[in-house]
Amino acid sequence: MGFLDEMGKQLGGVLGGAGGGQPDIMQIVQGLLTQSGGLDGLLAKLKAGGLGDIVQSWMGNGPNLPVSAEQITQALGNPQVAALAQQFGIDPQQLSGLVAQHLPGLVDKLSPGGTLSANPQDLLAQGASLLKGFLK
Image (cartoon, rainbow, N blue to C red; front, side, top):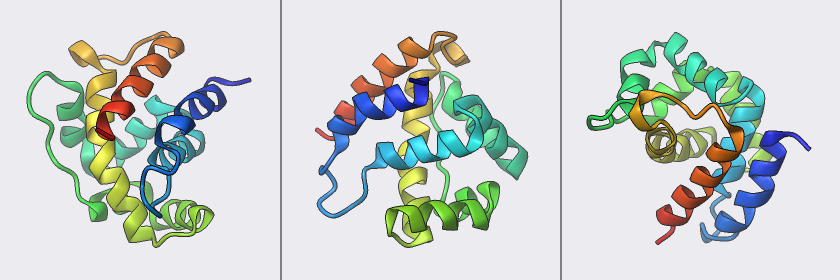
């Protein structure tokens, strides 16, 4: 089983059904990671889409710069956002909004000292702990 599958399996129970009709944010993030070749690939795509300074703030020690749903859609591209939104049965704007709301904090917590963990199991454990905190 791949890292993304394992991450989704372990984190799915953390957020499953927590949104009151809202899709599971971990499933959305997992979908983005799968489509983008992992967290490094997703961040590279966001940087290439003009969000380099914003993404870097999430990885640094200072405050996280905000990102809008429109910026997420522009950086990832309408086709990718629309396809993922259709998969979850939600509006593309809603999907981009959820990603904009949760991705900065997730990246911030997964990149202590400004770098991502080299060990996928570390990312898995940290991601599960972080997402539990979002629900409190």
